[in-house]
Length: 280
Image (cartoon, rainbow, N blue to C red; front, side, top):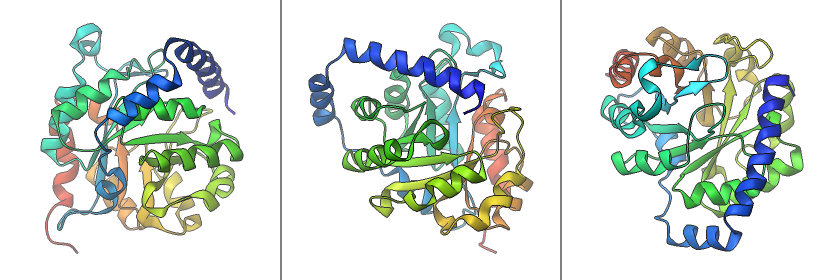
């Protein structure tokens, strides 16, 4: 595990233990029982409306460890996740990714509820999941999907989390950063139910923190079903989307590029406009 990721995971272990002391599993289960049913994240990403060439999971992201605060106005109360999510919806996003990690990304669990109240798309909790308790927490706060990072999880942990996410009716986006982890987790994509599992290839090198869009295209031949494949990070232009489509990749997650713009919704609209129209 790269050092940057190790630091986050070590802190997350402490954070989860602290949260467990603040709210009991019984309370979480009661919250989940009272929550509205999840919106179908898998279907939103894989079923493209006629004329839409690429599905975009648009990300609400305040800061990152490598870039810091993405825009000055995102500091303090100036950050309005619900406003950004509504812009994304209006611009044609298929789903929303919402950062909830507080220390490293400036997120918060309450952002999920605020985002869902503002628009009808399904929402992914993007965080560093290392304990089943976090899946209950995610569903209790309205998450429709969760990110599971292969580099953070042993195979047995991953299987347990996939089973629980399906039981909670949440889609799991299983993310890998390199070939070794792709080969390790490939048999589990879509487990235990194909309608709840997506595979993400992150184009960011966790050791150098640089991105390379061709990372996805180099690994795509190892993916059995590209319908469930999501390319993540380093996607900025309509040409990037077109390049990925030539390799069968029709779903992407885009965050920092959109969040750096004054109006993230307009940036998404620009990214998507050339992909609208008759199917080629």
